[in-house]
Length: 576
Image (cartoon, rainbow, N blue to C red; front, side, top):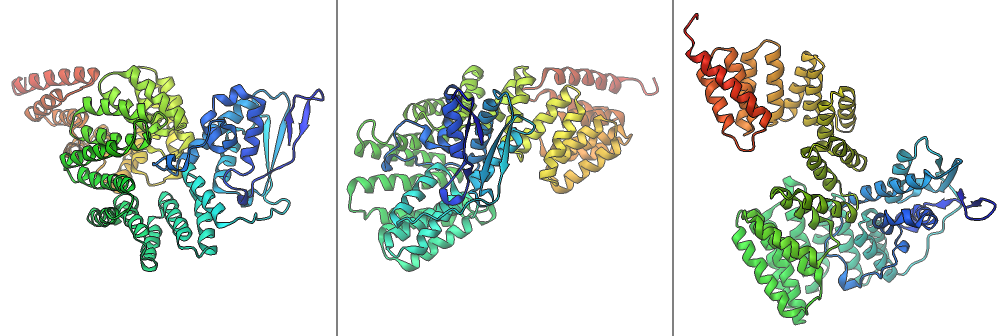
């Protein structure tokens, strides 16, 4: 590799970066990013969160003690956001190059998933630019470092805390294979199960806990395994395999075992957090009052054993749970006050800002919502849902250009984000950019060919182009995939109406109205009824549409005009 240097000769040679997975997550690319960060520290500061996550040596702040590690694990998809942010940093760095530079990476065929993902993101972002990547599948031999089980356990904990689950799973499997110590083996087993659950392999995690129960009588291990099993049934198994009753049974076992813990402080802390699982189930089952009582009891118990300022993330977790229950009870004011306190105690968690932004938005405090979305994006970093929600807010404020920018960011991070694809296509339709809208939707269908919402949107685009037969076919395909998609019924009705078949349009709109409380199906059905001369029914639909809350001003005007027309037609003399 040749990097722009600070020597008088003008350039510095750098050996290839070794990406072999045995060097850990982000092997090779972490060193590459560190080199660039040292070259442009001010630019690196604008990408501090993602760079520190990939290359921890760039973060000068002290690492948390083991007891203070985050109690919420990162979602597996976070690495895609890290890759996006790092690629943006490298692209900005490369913009200052005056001559082409080539970077060499070796052992890319044996890279960790995080490294492969980031190299792919760099390849897309740097295409046709002055910074070029040379990826070599082989390279000099990479010896496997000899490590002791305790070092493996530390590496496992670090990978889990940072959200690098493929590496964590490999480390855990290696640890399980070489240790016979019961405590260490349990650490590797539960670490492996945690990684598998994050990677959507919860069924295998469930088997690991079942295996553990056949090989140990240690009450602490059985307690932890019971709680973890409950969470798999409640959250992580595929929806068809989730079992809230089984989750409740396993939580009961875990709580009973926690009652026998010898340390009084640990007994209280463990019981409180296991009971949060019970509160979750109560809330899901329509009993928010019971959930709220459990959470309040837990907060009182924490206050009895924790000193002021101690374990702020633990406090924040319970307060966040309580805010969510207040929201479920319809008390937005208490939910918002709760989130204010949550963020005060744990200001580094992006999830809390995203939740509070939604409440600000619902209350009409859009400036505060924008601020919280910005914080969520910075801390996430590059949280796709925060970009998406901010895009919709930009659109509501008449800033479609900024909305498109945010939606493009969402899709750069997560090409499978269907809602972002559709929102971007609608913005393109709004500016009559049919080619852009169709290209974006087809890009989504290349990833998910049978996605009904994308088929529906493409049908709408084909209709705008005047291809009514093609639109009808696409909308019919969408309805075959999802008969509950009200938008597809509504759009196909409009197409069939334009094709001169109001009766078929009417049948589709009956389906749409049964599925949706939106005003558009009612308005469209009224239009079809007017064509068929059924004026009283049309008047009823228009009156119902006009009574709906939050009606768009433009649509309200059209509804009133059609209502006047229906009433006039209904009173006109026959043949007059």
